Length: 112
Length: 114
Image (cartoon, rainbow over all chains, first blue to last red):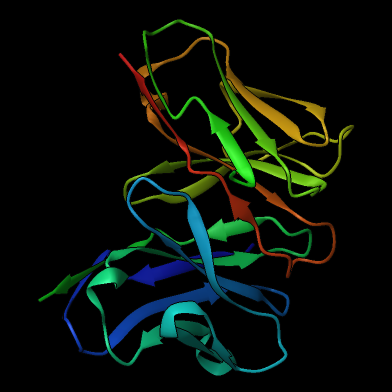
């Protein structure tokens, strides 16, 4: 069975600081991995996805994630946080049918 | 207009009432999903449908039913609502294909059951 664990339900950074949101997955098959962002009162938007073409995946709004098979990780990073990055972030793994299994979510707070 | 539209956006109702949440999409996708979001639990799959004649239970289907009226419409029903079904509900769609197809979400329905 596939699963996703996001380490840290809340992360707080200062504006301009590095953002690092952690995600570890468990999958018996080569995984498809996704990061979604949820702004207040909105649905989830796709940030980026890993589909085995490249281990470093670039997404929207300056975010990127690196797939590390040996560590079963897919951590999300952004070099410099902006106030507008404050949101909830979800890591998800897809099964072969396309059904998503989500992590618990991480709320990112950005302090001025 | 939004690609995935959920109605209503907010609903407050009483225990025991029957409730229907509706979802429509203009993306032309075959696959549709219903999730519920609870704080600290992420999103959990309730039901999914890969085409009009296909309905499948997800992780937490007890107490819910669905209807796929057309390719573009997928509704979720709570036959007799109970307070622990208070949550944020999302509809999503995806194109057919392998598991690398991203899902596209509506803005959600906030449901409160008193």
